[in-house]
Image (cartoon, rainbow over all chains, first blue to last red; front, side, top):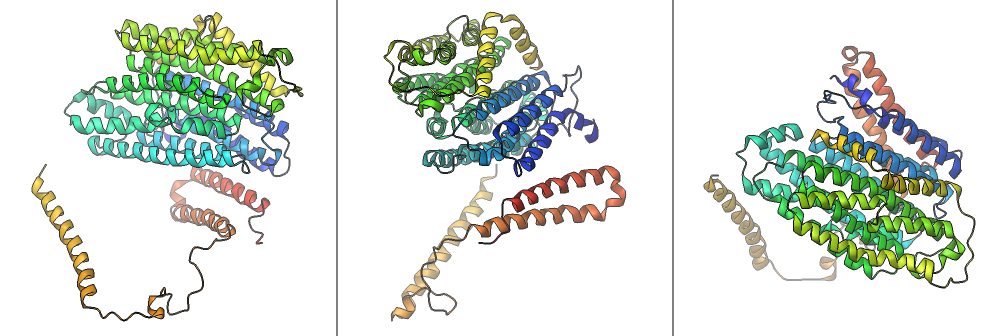
Length: 475
Length: 119
């Protein structure tokens, strides 16, 4: 397919870019949160209306740099949903000042473009470029509260860790090029199944690429940045970071490893299994002792990535369906949890868990929604999080990864303690004397959407399972 | 893998380090030792030293440098395009106009934010 014909398939990206530029220009003259937010939202809606359909015969786009398979479409839908919810959340986030709101939405929309490109990349160079674009935007977004020292510190830490891990991944990619003479994933796949590759070199390059992607998904040896960054960043950005780059990281991980390097004759599965076990355990154990809710959710999101990795280790169709469903459920419940944290911090001016004491008496609706999200993160049926856990554990048991499933279940029980602790604070403790202020309408709309999503995806699961099954069918 | 080839590289590395070290050691042994305050001060093209070299720059310099890069890149892409414009046809014209339009947006943004007002 020629270049001009390929352009049709990146219509969503073009719409988002045009929207971002118009917002940037518009913000020079008008800096009203609601006006710019609604504009950004309409760009997202327009982009999702123009998402290309998946085709019977996969088109070769831009010299096979991009692809348009059902797998990338699944992630594109999730990414546009995430960005839309984040825009609604940030309209209602009082810490974001109106002066720079145009730049904020500009960066957010560009982040969405980077993520859309990353999940549909079919070439290691394209993957690298789009992940790098996403990282640069994330660093700026983390530092968005310029006068807040925590925010600047978080951005600096994130930048230093990010630069290092990108360098490591790039080195791995250069080894791939040295070994196969190409960065095209389809060609690499062919060369791998033909065999005759030096095992030592391929082990090194797998570990290097894995390291770079582990950073994006905050998996265990590369998770140290997450708590500090999540705590220091503006909470709307934290919500974005905890779902967006993580979903992209998993998409790229699945595409590179499950699709291409699966037949390499080295045991990378054991390595990833260890990463999964450590990620779950360390995330959950450290989360228990946290007193700041953003920090606790950071450790919880590390642990959640560990559960997702179980499905990736299993690698069967069932396992990958589990990962995809888990990412979908995790997106809903984590966005919801951070949305509630913003709503509460808008009037409490605090993120300490003790300050949630007795929230139920003052704000029953938010307490109820936050409880739903926390229960879903725990994995209580019939909420979305339960089905995510059920699918990955089930896949692990069916493929005889009993150890993984056992560790996962034990960890879910450990996690129940710190999730329930917040619910206990909200419902059973005596309230402190603080009045609740007016609640932002866009934020409440976002929370309503996400709550409905968690309930529907939990209670009426069949269409979502079919969606996931169809999305993984390209493997 | 031919290990002898790396042997030559290794020999070159060792000799290179040895040569540099030898030059320093020999000159340290041979030179007269007669220090005075002028000799010990930092050499600044024969000028008298004016303070520390670690000074703060006005951030405005960087903004202007970034603006320069916008135009620099623009020229870098425009010149080869103009040279073969006749063969490329109307599609390349549209593409180039989009490119220039995006750069102009950046310029307007910087202008409006006061990058060109030197304080």
